[in-house]
Length: 606
Image (cartoon, rainbow, N blue to C red; front, side, top):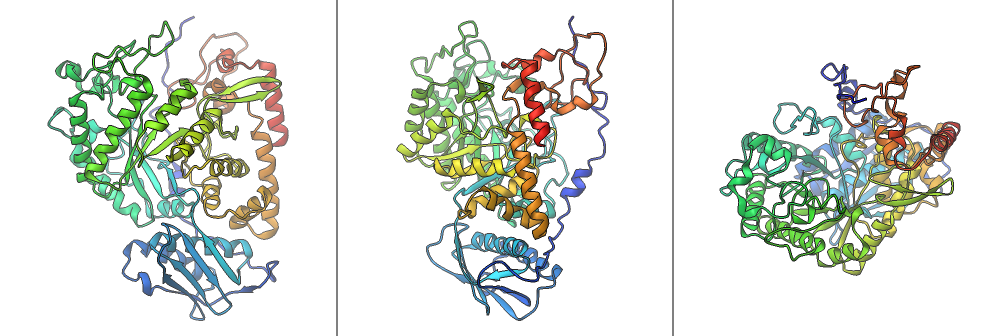
């Protein structure tokens, strides 16, 4: 039986977004004061005030000062008895700080404003965990994970089926309270999805750029607002996009016929945008120049340089019948995929350096799961320095479940990782002195992407520790989901600055102590351990996450007679939740019996 896709009955009739109201509020945390402290050399502190002299003219710290002083006032520990002094030092890194605590005063030593921001948050967290006590001594910290990037939870995805564009409407997706929550979670970067055809009008492809002026105006407003909370803004794009890709042809028709000299490898799909042509180099130089001159405070560019869509010739659809990539490009047909990718990345890096030398370029190789180790080695070695190589942390990982090997395609929270692909990339990055970022899902992933987050921060402890061991210096914490500000993103923020936990249990107790009093924090930490034990039993099966019952199971229309309808996609509100082709969610190798075993284990521990 053939079934035509049916739009969800509630596609245009969604419930009120109450979560948006929650995210637009920031509740100042309350200290659960303890009668006595378990810490050595600890003292109950009151009458705290902040001496701002060193950074008095630094307007970008105003939000942090207000946040800290509101915390003191809310908890009744403000006054004029205990000074916290700021001292400017030479030689500290960005976000690095030194906190020197005595019973008479506290001194924060930093080289720049972001160190102040992180030190004030650390003091708040420590006061919450200790029940209002400070401990005499010295705390020195600098970020091990220096770049921590997420995406706005409730801005439109700029993708089908609704194609909302957050830079084109008049909605404020970054209210002050929301940015304050991100700041407390340690976030220092957000990405906004757009495209060059939406953002820039060039002389080489003048058809592009309709509405660019309004988008750039809003982009600059967002950048300015986020700066007050220590958060940089990145444009995420898949560039240079093929002129024959559906997203382009839907807007501009058969535009490729106007620019045949840039068309490259075609394979079985759209013709790629060949990076070895003079036109491609000139277009990219001009487009990047216009973008970063129009938005001079833009932090950088994140681009999927391999995988996802057809962009350059390293990323064309291969001959499907032969199941392999073939380069039939008239310009670079003698080049390999790694050669083309390294050349593409250098082209982008050079264009960025020409207009803004300190801009970050993050090359996300989402499609490396199909590459052999030697291909990845070549790319990492020949990719230019001065960029960040970003690899999926868990993708193509091998997991043994019930004595059988399973493959963890795409993103996973329940599987800690890293995969062999990531470890190999990390080894090569260390060998050649390249910067490496990890693409993770922190709040939730495809296993259950329809909830705000999964409360299992112990998994984040394991992921971050392994990432640090492999030399990772940045984490992109989400895709369109997994980005709700929560204990999971807070876990990344804490672990990025505190490396002295004796183990996972101590970390969980500290994290719980930020939100609960001492007695309840112990119980919560124990509950998190049970959640982790259960969630790591999730069946490692990509289709089970994409189409399985973990999302819409409670509203499935179970019928006595088979309907032979396809299962619904978890990531879009397009299909009705009445499918019964159970085998579709087991495609990657589990039987119904095996899945039942794992779900029983999850349920028991949860």
